[in-house]
Length: 464
Image (cartoon, rainbow, N blue to C red; front, side, top):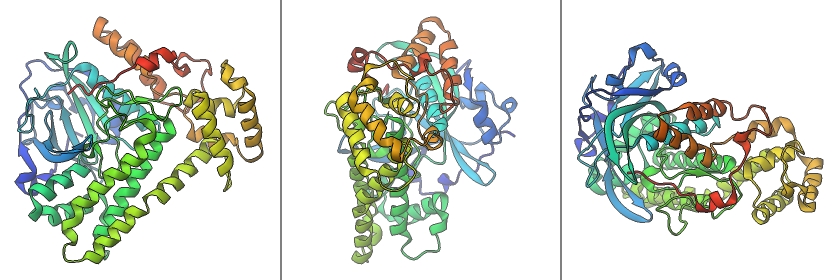
């Protein structure tokens, strides 16, 4: 089956998007195609080629979405500066945005060139692939297309386009844009989003309050899953927060190796606003801005808006309950309780700075890793305490990945392609991350953390 478009976003007010055309590319070349995603979308790879997936052969006019956002706390009116939606693909009753990233300038590009480097595109491809297989709700990458041109960022690289797939690219910042730039459209737009993502709310009284609650819960689920696998998004601006709880915009992201709640790898996060341990309070702050954008819907009912504020007041309790449940599963605790040992374990992690991923594997199967930190009396004490109430291997194996995208391995794979045009390391990583929970060689190179010196100096970039 080829792409089957039915783009309902175009039925909304034209203030919310602009018609666009992808840049002309003489000889686009397919570098990667995600065949598993093709199957999930009901697509036949034979019906897809580099010209279709780079927007050189159009099924309809693409659009770039307008949105706003708080970027590092500062409100800005934005939009798709280097991205455009080819269309909404429909398969088995589900709807998916097919978006090109790096496909040229749009009316929202400002000073940007609308392009993307091949390393940034490959980075998003592998991170989204890993997150999908880590069971974290995420955007997905359908293909990487090389454009044949060059792009200057920190260095000159080949240009590329990422073909990204999401349930939609509607974000907190889209609501902020509508509320500030087209407030007369807010009710119709909110109804559209509810019908698209939360249709079970359509016939309910107080559906806008319940809509906020659903978005909050889906976002909490997403961030708790980030914490479960040690993921740092790196740029949790409100324009990067999906209304459906999908992780997306893998820019200056990374994974924690040595446990550190203050860990920041982003070159633009100078004050640690989006550090690993700060993702919970930032999510609450972002939800507060989302709630403000919904305020005009309640102008005739202060009581209803008070109900929405009450939903936000429940954030801490809901997040903490989900986080605690997640952490008990990581420790193999099947029954209720265990708060004291969970807190003791987290204190030990903070003090020891042990490898976050491997520590749970060592708890599950002692002797996996030759690391002095696991020979300490404190660690042995915690494991002995857990032996009475946790360490259920069946629970732990479903919750704790054996493999994550180790930052230094990602860099090695990207550099090999940039320097030699060789994707073998990249493809080897994809193969490992296809089954990150599978029991393989416990001493595999893919489970080894980098040197602490590497982590202390490692920096990721937005590449915009």
